[in-house]
Amino acid sequence: MAKYLLLKHYRGAPTAVNDVPMDRWTPEEVSAHMQYMQDFADRLGRTGEFVDGQALAPEGTFVRYDGEGRPPVTDGPFAETKDLIAGWMVIDVDSYERAVELAGELSAAPGAGGKPIHEWLELRPFLTAPPTITE
Amino acid sequence: MDEVLLRSLTPSVLGILVRRGADFAAAEDAVQDALVEAVRVWPEDQPRDPKGWLVAVAWRRFLDATRADTARRRREGRLDEEPAPGPAPTVDDTLQLYFLCAHPSLTPSSAVALTLRAVGGLTTRQIAGAYLVPEATMAQRISRAKRTVSDVRFDRPGDVTTVLRVLYLVFNEGYSGDVDLAAEAIRITRQLAAAIDHPEVAGLLALMLLHHARRATRTAPDGSLVPLAEQDRGRWDTASIAEGVGILQSALARDRLGEYQAQAAVAALHADALTTEETDWVQIVEWYDELVRLTDSPVARLNRAVAVGEADGPRAGLAELAALDASLPRRTAVAAYLHERDGDLATAARLYAEAARTAPNLAERDHLTRQAARLHTLLSR
Image (cartoon, rainbow over all chains, first blue to last red; front, top):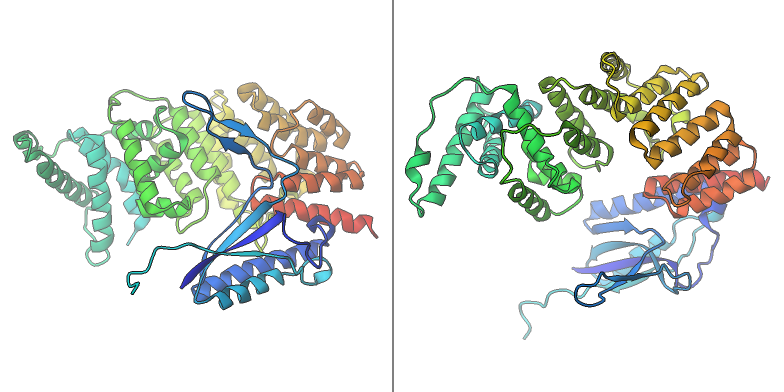
């Protein structure tokens, strides 16, 4: 088994094929999209491959240590940030091929006109604990 | 097995142990052990006196734990004797537990967790599941909370408003899990209302019952939010409404108004209206005036602006809104709604989309996105 992170981007991913902002869809298309996402997560739960999924607000803050006794420095949000994560799903699957297959299905979620968005999702393998037997 | 009965006995059992001289943290652990044991044993063999059974088992657990702990310290003698069964503990013993679990020295999340366990009788696993955190994390939060209140004297009355704030949090910000936190909040508030005669406790209980009555209609089958105006009022729980209104009326009759009674009064006026059009917005504005006077809360002012928009028209609502801080959560969503009511669909669509970007949760974000999508669809026709 191997864990993968599926990352959805607000910004930073290559442009989707069906690239229309969601508030320009019809309400029915929005509902169909939500239903697809929910069904996808439910199905992975049933196959024993779903670990976690969360959505993130678009605006965040950068924070860093500023030395002993000082409050942390905060900065941002930066309008020019090139890469902006919208949310993630963690899956636990048997192979890289299965992870790609699932990411492909998620990317087919319907958007404007009821057609698949063909959105680019980023697939990142987890670095996990070392195996017991190594020789 | 009656799990609700089991949970409802928790605070009085804990109160008895503390009254017998057990320190709160150890007694609380012992009661949790007894609850787990009850879940295991009762389905086969329910005791005739459930409370007596729980006290006996919890006290034995407490003695065992203390003995193991004090064997080293040779303090065994003092704690070894089981006190003779004295008079039943008074209501005040349990009441002290509420104050302790909501003690001002605790952070809100700690007070919520401790209240649900020590007063609510939920297990750490159930509480962790409800708030979507690992069980070990919740166990740590609870034991830290117990350490924080370990020096608090148990015999001084606390401030009931701190307890109400914790129960309000459980009801209002409960996530979903195996445990219905809203129902638990109502159950605990009901217990509190039986133990203390206070109009704001009654006000909070009424507020919860009135909102709980609408629960089935608040979300569509696909999980999307249904706004108050579009809810199927025929499916509101009339028994819950009747109980809430009754409790509120006797509380208001005592003429000691507080924020929970005022909020419950607003909820009661919505419950009174058979259709959205029959809503008495003028009276609702008056209750929000009271609420603003009592709390000076920006959220109350925002809700007041919505009510003014309904009572005196969207322009009046927008004028009220203009005085509120632009960064106030949900202000943009309210502005979008009032602009739509005013007929300015383009502005409303833009504001709905903007509000969706800053929405505090997914359900609201989806709802606001749908509103923007609906108006854009209308505009493009």
